[in-house]
Image (cartoon, rainbow, N blue to C red):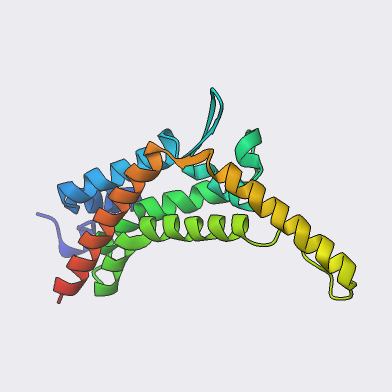
Length: 195
């Protein structure tokens, strides 16, 4: 018989063990939604650019490069440095729904909103980036220079309208958006019902 001083205390579970346990506690619909968000962000095109018979797709994990320079949507995104920062952010948002199953704080149920929030923020930033003035008028510009800059911005926006006709949301965008809405609704519902 072991004396109380000889009993070994159980080691605390590792982070991987805690994450696996949390993943097991997520209901099936949320698991399916997380997998759909993963497919929509990393494996399927979010935006599709069509120029004649040519098609070029942009995946969500490259959207930060498109936000930084919208013209890259048409010329390719190979080797983008933006991936180094944006992919980890995507992964954090993708695994955010595990948080309420690790910690027991009521507010953690709102982490289910993270994938949808990231997509909406990126959509707003992309819209803002492509619809603003491309050429800013300096504060000391003469009336003639201001008119020329205004004319140039008008041309760019007219061209932007033509370009927008060639850019559409791909299946990955729709898949991730629907799955993100499902996750957000489930998280908000659990937040409201949590004690």
